[in-house]
Image (cartoon, rainbow, N blue to C red):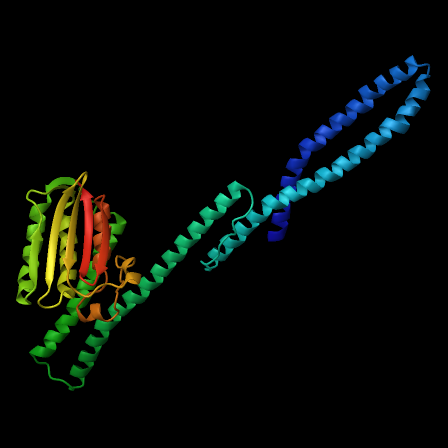
Amino acid sequence: MKRRSARGLAARIALAALAPAGLAVVLLAAGVAVVGADAFRALMMAHGESAEAAQTMFDQSVRGVLIAAVVIAAVLAVVLAMILARRLARPLEDVGAAARRIADGDYGARVPREGPEELVSLADSFNQMAASLEEQERMRRDFIANAAHELRTPLTNLQGYLEALRDDVIQADRATYDSLWEEADRLVRLARSLDDLAEGEGGDRPARRIDLDLAGILEASVELVRPVLEARGVVVERRWPSPLPARGDPDHLAQVLANLLQNAVRYTPDGGRVVVSGEARPGSVLVGVVNSGEPIPEVDLARVFERFYRVEKSRDRARGGAGIGLAIVKQLVEASGGRVGVESSATGTRFWFSLPG
């Protein structure tokens, strides 16, 4: 069926190319056969030949050559039309075959860049789409695997505690209840983060872009984490002017800063340093949160804002992270018309976001 469809397309292209050439040949042949015959007969009769003899001479010479020329021209036109049709149809066949492979789950299918400029452009667009689908499929699989793992860990711990309590292996003391509460709280926080992520994607909580003073939001956010950081000997530096005009959703920005600062709390070592900065730029405002923790490897920098992505698969789990906070940061900032980014080196890691000024 696929081959028949491809041949049908090639045949239609060939017929479309052949029709004008065939019409031109027919008109030329008719002109030679009718007008040329009359002119030839009149010329021969003017030189003393009879009409019958002139017609015979025309049939034996000019008409024979005309018929041969028409046959040769028709054959060449058919061959050239088929070559052209095949050249145009083959890239389309490749696109169709690659599309069927993607539909069957093979997201690595690509189309060769060949043929006229328009078909090369089509191949480039198709390959870009296929690469995007392949990346989305990878992210989907990572999301499912990581979400299952994040749910499985506290559930397994809860199951173990409950079995031990049921079998009288451990006593139901305060420490046991604290451990059970901690695991249940992890599940609650994970569910809340997933709700936040789903709300942003579904558009149920659109951003309110209003004029605001970002300095007040920065101050309030830092004050929330300052006691925890100072208890560990972490120095907190504030670097922003007041006022700091910006445009965005104050609730979203408060959550963005809370997530970034909680990230700094997790990964800044005792006795380290956290710097929160804000500066006005032409047409925008830039906010940065720097911590002196371990650097993020270069290969991971491009993926830290993906949901459930963790640079080290165990360290976030030990520190209570689920790998969703930075994905929410990216989503909320972009909903306010801004951008996010991260830089990391041996001296520290800097997360930043910009907003319209």
